[in-house]
Image (cartoon, rainbow, N blue to C red; front, side):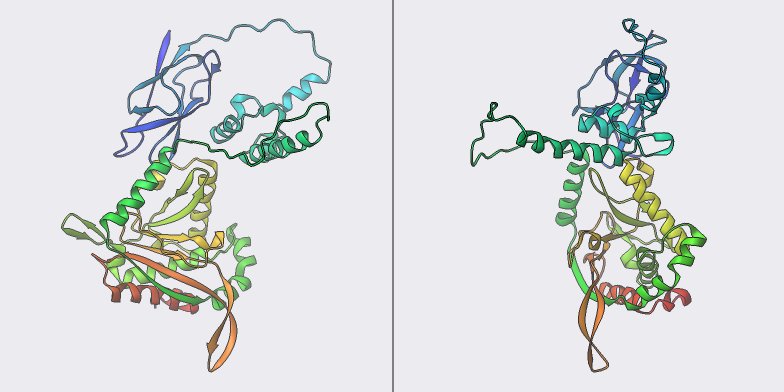
Length: 402
């Protein structure tokens, strides 16, 4: 009996998606709840599972097609089994042990399956480093890079009797359709520029005190909480102080009204394989340093694995974007609508500064606060950024709520 596979509910206000990749092909066996296709929404990739066990009988849409919630995209022949393969010569005794180490399609996680398909690799040829020898996404990426590195080497070692025609000065172009996520990022950023009165204020911050505190307590912190003490938790807590004192920076415009929040849901910009995403750490103003670090690390891992959900991405009242991890010295970040402000962090570098009439070398970082001038006045923006600067330069303020 043919069972229809339909596009599931994708999240609040999300009515359509694009077909990203087919993880199973017609004629292949599928288990119940096994992912058969990846759909790309405006924010995340969603794996659609098979409703029954059987054989995938047909794809009804192609990669790149736009599909609506509830649309039928494939059919599965329930209870069917794959055609028996021709009898093979019995394998030598060691073969069963070797087969046990070969990762089967059903043991691959959705993100690993997707990576294997995109790289065009045979998973059985990749050595897994995960638990019980399972493949990880890093294993696939390493194998793909090794494959690319082997190609030039093979060309160099080709016999002289097989000349390769090379056109000097050849120029090539590649046309690749934008992913749905990239299209959405482009639309939202342009919308923010068109709709908001964007302005950025800058300051610099001496990181000496935070670096000293982190150096003194990082080992004890990691031993107790099982997570490293990073700089993001300091800036998150400092931002909460500023948002509490300057509520407009944590507010948004809705029609002709201003919506203020007595809580902070912090959007943290992290890099994912398909672009920048901003999962939300909710009620971060009530969290401890350890809870902040654990939450951010968890989202970073999910972004890397491609397992962020719509719920992870929805909401947010203020954003922190750390371009410093990529080496950025200074930038003017764009707000994440409908939010009204975003804090940009940058790289730390030793610079000469004046202290008590003397020129000294200190680890300095430029801070940038971009804001919607329709809602936030310049005085409020500058004051909020100054509160963050003061809290970082004197972390005791974070403990005594000053």
